[in-house]
Amino acid sequence: MSESDAGGRESGSGSRVSRSVEEFVGQLRSFTDRARGAVPFSLPRLPSPPGALSAAQLRAIDRAVRSQRQQIAAMTAQLQAFDEQLAVFERILDPLVEWSATWARLEESVADLVRRPGDPDDGTTPRA
Image (tube, rainbow, N blue to C red; front, side, top):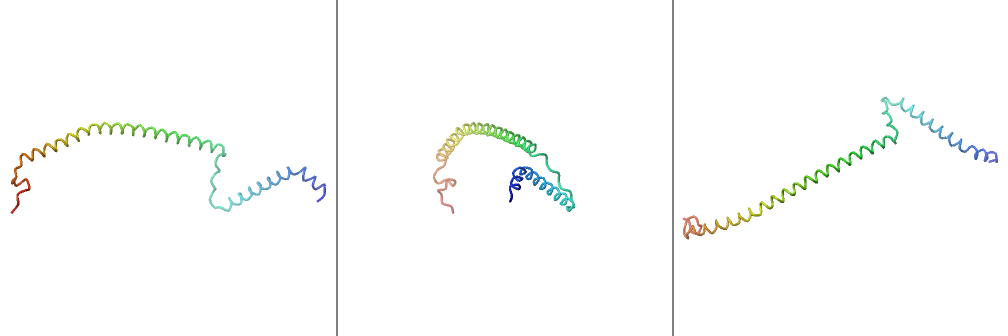
């Protein structure tokens, strides 16, 4: 390697890199053109530039997240209302349960007074 070669590399290294990138892009284009000719169906169009695509996707994600949070807030409000309704129902049921237990005790005591030993309905008489 001579000094002129080394000097040429230093001064032309930027142009060599750009030239090799251009050659690579050219080869890639020719390959895709040949591939398109070989494929019997048409290839799909490329999407819009990545920046625009990601901005649109981010907007869609933002709307979806906001919508889901609104749905959760609505469900939370519905569950809160349902919980309040159950609390009222529970307060209504407490005296009814107590009243029912009292009524059952009253029926038992009255039934004991009305039944006499030996009655066929009291279960103490042997059956034939």
